[in-house]
Amino acid sequence: MGNLKPLEIVLIIAVILLLFGAKKLPDMARSLGKSARILKSEAKAMKKDDEPTAAATTDAAADAPQAAARTIQAAPGDVTSSRPVSEAKPTTQS
Image (tube, rainbow, N blue to C red; front, side):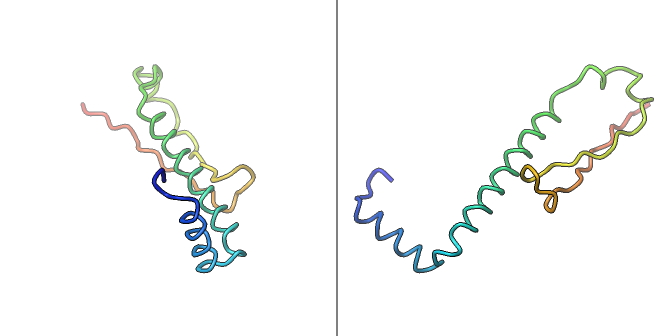
């Protein structure tokens, strides 16, 4: 972007407006924002799942009942795109 001149930026914006139309651009930006939030929350969940917990290392954790499925929301208040996340069951070898 550092090599673009102001006239070139204006031409690129004009072409985008002609291709997609002014009515579709806010919807596209909104969906891009939702996608970025989903990606961010999934990345945080993956990092959190990789961290070892003290409860997982004890024998009492194996006897604990199965926890309810987690739900990750795409955006605050948006329940149409939320979905349950299946968690991998720990396997024990004897």
